[in-house]
Image (cartoon, rainbow, N blue to C red):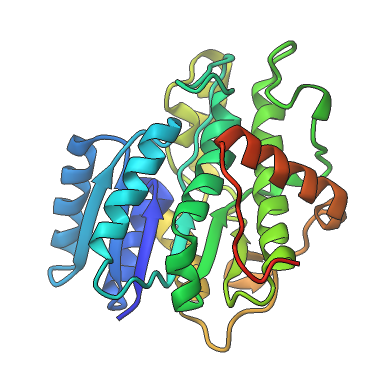
Length: 285
């Protein structure tokens, strides 16, 4: 039985992926922001998949203290085998105004990138043991985007859209760097382009024109259940899929800047610094 961790698993894409993977026979550990949303999601999932092996843990992943606590709880849940077959870093958010986390970082950068970076670090040995897969929820918006190195947090001239686009570029650069730096580890990283999806991500803790725009736009999006098929594909497909970026269960083109090794290394090292860690994943190149 495969063991899969999915963040942002109480609604939208994350919940649909949890349901699909549970239905395929995987043991699913979902991560949600609050105990209440986790309990409701688990109850709903068990109605859809009565025999599901599903556990939820909760924590605010914009806080590094909570990320560490969530990782510790996950490791206690998988202590018997110590193996983690897949980590789906799906949790993310949009903020229309400049918002900082308890650690003092801009929220979109912290939640959409640093949370996945730190959680992957914390669960790395479990992933290595299983020769597992790390999957990020990305976005086509990473294209034609560049790192805003002069002010990564956009603290001086905040732009909701640019901060979001940069965070999705970070997902791409981090996944690419995992595959380069730890090529002999047996762990493989991917990014899913879900396309336009009918979820509430653009309406959570936003307001004004951002929320109104998303409310209209999402009506034209695919269902989370359709998008979840790609996550299930990347978790289960054998032999191991070879490409970095996937849409609708097929390899997709990504921005050539993602292959910029200098930016990938720089982001990796900055992320280590901001998380206060040294990501020595073994077999490092």
